[in-house]
Every structure is written in C-alpha cells, then in structure tokens.
Length: 105
Figure 1 (cartoon, helix red, strand yellow):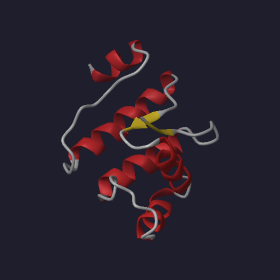
Figure 2 (cartoon, rainbow, N blue to C red):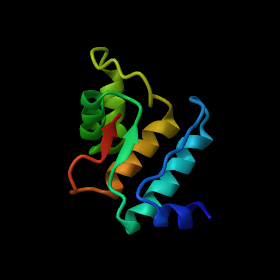
Figure 3 (cartoon, rainbow, N blue to C red):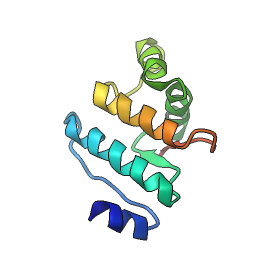
Figure 4 (cartoon, rainbow, N blue to C red):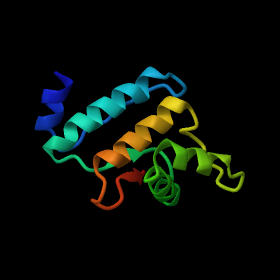
C-alpha cells in the first residue's frame, strides 16, 4: 500500500521519532522503491548547507559518512546512527549521477 500510494503522489513524508532504527530502514526501502517512479530527492530536517555536505559524503557510501561524522568541525546534528547513515548512503546511491539527492528543509 505504501508503495502504491507513493507512486501516485508527487512527494511522501515520514513523521518519525528520532533514534529508532526501524524508521530509517523503512525510509531506505521505500525511497529506493520509489526511485523507479521518478523520486530523486530525499529531504531531511537539516539546513541546506549541511544536507549538501551529507550528500557529498554519502557519495562514498557509509564510509564517507563515517569520515564526515568523525570530523569534530562537521557538527552534524542527526544521522549518526548506523541505520540512518545506511539510509542516506542508500538514497544517494539510488540516484547516483542525478545531482544532489539529499536536500535540507
């Protein structure tokens, strides 16, 4: 049902409680499935400049995100849970070559 409704919509939104591993797992699977329907942007509740940094780091997968999180100057507020980093890396990989995939709102 989620996939069918997402395919019929212009955008989808997940309201979730932070720190629960299942939420980014669901988001990753749903977003990856929706890319076949034209979805190409994963919008997250961070600043646009930080989203651009996450997008850049995620081009190198989870390792790129780990490197960003290890830099004390990065000051990334969210996404340091393994499952969250895997979701960002998965979203970035799903739209590789199509510009910035992770947007901040």
